[in-house]
Amino acid sequence: MTLPPELNVMVKSLPFLWQGLLVTLQVSATVVVVALVLGVTLGVGLTYGPRWIAWPIRLFSDIIRGLPLLVLIFFVYYALPATGWSINNFWAALSALALFETAHVSEVARGAIQSIHPGQNEAGKAIGLTFVQRMLYVVLPQALRRFLPPWINTVVDTVKGSALVSLVGIVDLMLAIQQVIGRTFQPMPMYVLGAIMYFLINYTLSLASRRLEARFAYIRE
Amino acid sequence: MSLRLHYHLNFNFVWKYFDRLSWGLLLSLELAAAGILIGIAIGLSLALLANSGGRAVRAVIAAYVEFIRNVPLLLLVYLVFYGVPSIGGFAYDAPTSFIITLAVYAGAYLVEVFRAGLDAIPKGLIDAGKAIGLTPWQRVVYVKLPTMLRIVLPSLSNAFISLFKDTALASVIAVPELQYGASWIYTNTFRIVEVYAVVTPMYLVTGYGLLFGLRLLERRFAIRRL
Image (tube, rainbow over all chains, first blue to last red; front, side, top):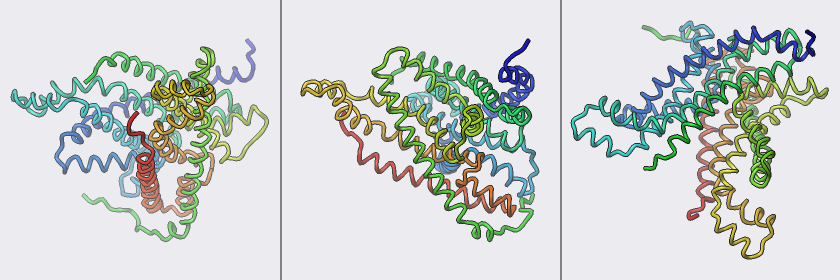
């Protein structure tokens, strides 16, 4: 079978790119889970916490969201070892990305929780529910519908942001593409192939977000 | 437990090469400004086109929007800088390449912003334009655009701040903006903690300064009653 050279390099490099794609998915999935747990916790703290809890969270979130992700990754990657914490590039990049996404998820969670009428929380108090019970049984289940569509957008941002971990030497999909180009000198086909791969993952997520949004569109407060 | 630095902080090099950071910051702002201006031109014309055009036109615009929004910006930066010249047989310098990338990227987000803005114009205003005998083109220029620009101003300023942060990616193709200035200093002097102790506040102060400044502008131009 003779393929044109552009297609040939795309087909031949697929197994190698697959390895990179797995790393991208692994990084993204880990960050998404960590950011979900931490972000929702911080979002609850931001909404219901006393000033000494809410204020530091607000500061954390505003500082992290005010910085470029690239700067954050380089900062964690280079500065943590200087404080005596030896950390390899994988965990440095992963924690930087997780910090970044946690800050964004905490804002999404805060928005979703604040959209629930305060009367719901007060009613929970009136029937004697503890704070944790009020969160788990009253507020969070209702906030979920407001939370899911924008949260999926942060998942898309995570997958896109995970391409930056290639800059500290983690062979994810982005760096795998770069390495193939380094050997074959065929940039255009490889970038197009990579773009298609990222597109397929993220477009699926975007579609899910839009469908959920349409499904919950009937909710009017 | 002792959390101590393994070297002594020394800011001398950061101050010595501070002009790389200050000029870098200025270039970051210039890149973001050029990106959003061209992005507005792309977004606005495509939004108007989508509103008046047929199904095929809308499908092409939707494909552009979805493709750009679902691909990492880093990959687009590489694609425009290394990929496009490789098949086009031409080249452009790194800042030009980055501005093109940023504009195409911003355009994809702004199409949606402008479409939402056009939809938010009260029908009564357009009807009033018809009633006093404005042509379709006059209605766009004198009724739709001025109203819509005031509606979308908050979205535009958010997009600008977001683009300002995205300019850090220009460092990967050696555009000497702020992050590149930072990396130049620490690769030459190894003063990483000190460099970032200065660069991080520069990003934050500029970003939030823009935010508050643009909020004042938004308040000045907000439409109180639609």
